[in-house]
Length: 451
View 1 (cartoon, one colour):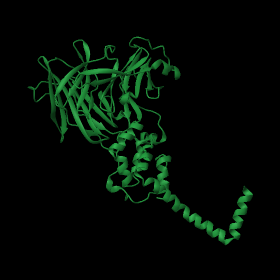
View 2: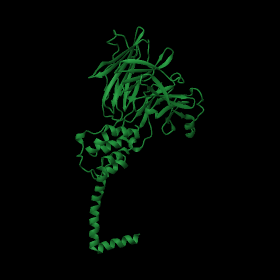
View 3: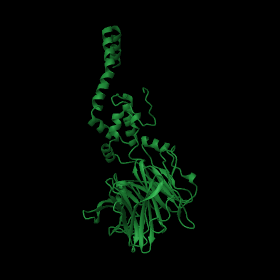
View 4: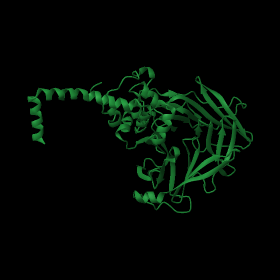
């Protein structure tokens, strides 16, 4: 092969016609490559299929930077629904909330290079907040931090909103939540909770769910934050006295419903608050679900999952309402935890068939019940329900004492795209090297040598 190459080179040197023809072919090659790329990328259907195969929302944003036409494709609601169906938002890590005096601790999970760079640039540490007790919640890339004065009563201080993925952004401070109702003779709320609705950190709406007792009734007020002031959005009254919230509330923005759990008449009930009709209803849980041995989770189509452990099985129920407005539960999936644990060398002695397992504690569940955190013998495990995989992600320390809760931190969805005015003309053909980098090279190490 080397002799053939040398012979070819010498013939080009000795023969001017051969050398000239080779040079002309070399000039035609970039033009032919550009024409081939244009033939594919100018086809809207093909472009959409190519963009769908990007693995992460960060790659999708980089693709949208190419030109206005690509941005319009990537940011289209129909395309984003298809993209999310193929690529669910990634679990970047979780906060551990224990009885220790230190603030909640962030535990990052291993990520592919594209997302590892996102986590590396973030600021998740909460040590600067000091030893004060506060409630922590994560919502689509945001942290909601609410501190309380425990004495003489549990007074709620202003809630702080932080965005760990964008440390340069200032911490937002929400106005103080009302203590008493202005519509019910000044009765004092005994439960208050901040909820967020919106998409991807854009056009956010903040709500406050507040509950109080009035004689033999329970009043549930929902406030909306409008122009810096909490304004009554919805108010419901039920004849059931003393309803207290037992879990963090779940707000389904698409349907204007709020879900929670309460202990009523010696049993646990699902609270369903409809903000449109200002009605409150109580729903029984499936008969086999005992105590608080479960978690609630949203589905992508604005329905509700209930997940609990029964023996060695993880059972996933779907809450539905029929055409007459009657609630019912459908057992959607059953997962054998013993089998998953055996495959990944996790002890299975904690599972007892036929009853609720006293040795496992569920801490958090992902959207669509895609993952679940289970604590077993002071070790926290992450179960990936979709791929039926499991791994140890945290081991309790003597300092932790008791693990109160686990707060998952997810990648933001949908991604924030650049403003249209900043983009190139849609007719401009982007650099071939840049196009390849979008699909092949992590953003943290790529810098185009031609642009």
